[in-house]
Image (cartoon, rainbow, N blue to C red):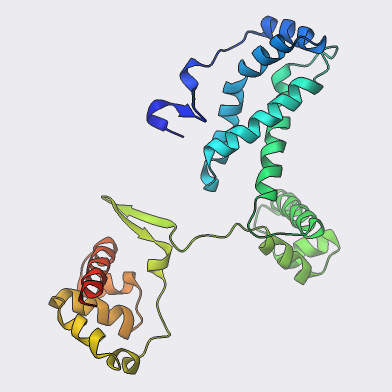
Length: 257
């Protein structure tokens, strides 16, 4: 997807046609009668609807091109199954069809497979949580949700954890003037020890090649197992600067190797 060109799947969205209600009804009647040209025109005339819907899923790190194509499948199904005899706007019928198609794709494309029973329990738990929040005006406990559903607490916990989307360690959590801070940068390394560093002469020589500030950051980060936030507070610079200096120091060490 090229946002500067307003282009998706090779289609310049600024050129997409917008159909009026009367034109839609006429095309729907003709398509229902077997007019393939009317069917194609109706699909092309509703691509903006698909485009507007996929914006709701923009934060899921999925390819917008893929979501657009899946949304078009939902649109085609809506065109082929819409009952022109009902007093319902086509968009009212098409929107849930498109959203449903996209959600099925996201569910089936998930890297972690979840059984239908677990997923159903999780969705029931989310619904029960919303009901309890409305009733109590505060966040319910897992025990309260499980009691409302008549399920075991452990089962509810397992189900709700199962539908949480995994987060990459390289997910940016902060950005300061182009210096991205990643989730991985927030984690300290508790596996390293002084002995394991000193065992490698090559590694020790690489550390010596760093300047005083870089050496200090590497020592605090890997010897002392401190997070970048803790290091930033200790040496008096921003967390983004610590991240940049750490990456630069590691790159120097790689060149030494």
